[in-house]
Length: 296
Image (tube, rainbow, N blue to C red; front, top):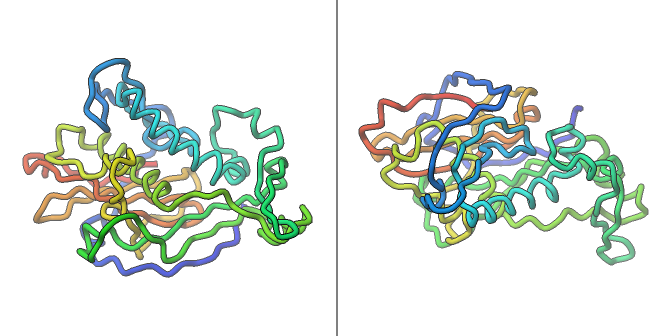
């Protein structure tokens, strides 16, 4: 499937050397897991700890952290994933035939928003007749990296848009509407979704014990409104275009302060946006443990 694409402008990323120039691939085609034994978000060891998919199951994730999330934190992160995967990406995921725990939903008409006669209406239609689109907001660099004045939230100055099949105008015309309306997805929630993926890979790669301080977890849980301090975009798309996975990941350490960066490329088959997430500060003793891998 060859999508149409709207290209974006992005802010220069001067610290690209902090990541990788040549990336070694690590391909995970079957389920792999690593034991954690405490909640990676709040540190709790009480009660039943559940497994945590690093890349969401709905995007083909096979890497799992065992006993890695308490019930309260899982409720928060699962709700975040559901909103992105089932609302923002529902029709596109169906078109891409990604994994789903609810295959019957793809056989039934699902809600879609349209504007008709000046009113926003909800109709139900099969995914084949919906706007199958992937929208990836483009953010500035994390404020922690470029040092710009920062107060709260996150802003997008452009967006990657990949239409899988019919364009929005054609879908609207099919339904006798003026336009198709995407469900509301606040930028902060999408950035938290990306941060959760990046954080999971960092824990799988380095373990919790490798970190002297973790920056990103309060924002992932929605307890702070500083996601733009830790999440942003790179202007240089350093990952190869590849069609075998929906996410590519790489790692880096900013020398001088040992801050761990995870770089996440969304939908590399379409050369999607590449996000930069500052996860936390590594203990100096773990510097030599740093490896540069690309994970699906």
